[in-house]
Length: 251
Image (cartoon, rainbow, N blue to C red; front, side, top):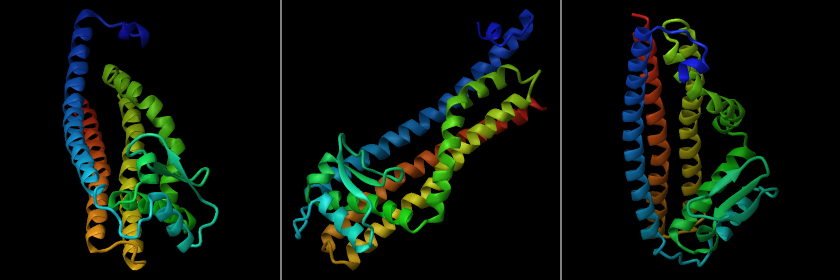
């Protein structure tokens, strides 16, 4: 059916040959995806464990995540960003489009080291936005490109494998599309690490947390950052796999 969709007229031998290539393509990509998913799951489980642990380390100042966020924004002179509650767990994020710091219900309401860390981290993104942090600006510009690339790249890559002997450039186009998503993952790393550094520096310099609370906030953000690191490494590994497939087809 796939051959009919692409309008190809293969003889029986050519169909079997390309079917083997598709199987090899699927096995290779599935192995990489499986490894990345496994590591991501392990890191995510560790992250959840850390947050559960530090959610029991209550702040001496008694401030909620929402109050921490509002104070950090105020201390940086940011008046046009709202702090709002969003459903779910670990769904916290900063939205530059409508300038909102979105905190999950637990983070918004709770008064512990984990909530303080997350709230301050998301405000770190708001500070980046206000100060036109170059990596955040670059990532924001890539968003529409990545959205388009993500919609087509898997189909283009599959078609490229199917037609590698007749139209090898199609696989190269798929690789270029995937490379944009990989670039986005890589650029995300300095954005996330910088937001965490800003959060921790503010928490410490403004004496918002004591030594024990600071250690909990630092450990929480360290594991949160590792989820982005795993995603970037997985994307790079997958990109290299596609490139090797393309180079192999040229031999």
